[in-house]
Length: 72
Image 1: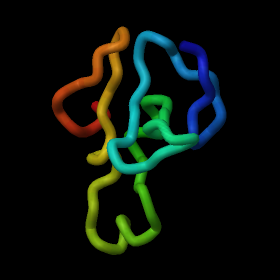
Image 2: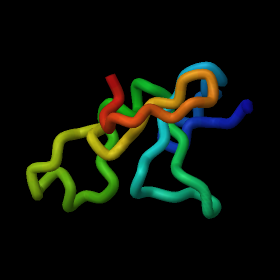
Image 3: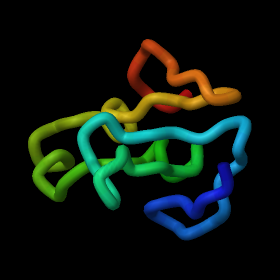
Image 4: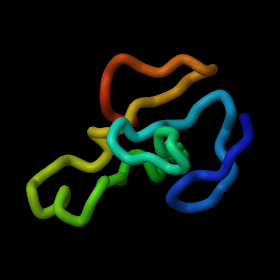
């Protein structure tokens, strides 16, 4: 799978990237590079509501989606 990051446009590493469990792009979960996933907020309200950046994301490693939330 080669696709661009939904935030910065850099090409994703096929072996390790993240998806947002809330945001969609083209009917599929938003794909993000790990760096962008760590700082991701779904909406502007998330930051003002006290949400933690990246907690809505899950890492994808070698095609397997992590069970835990948060890009670490």
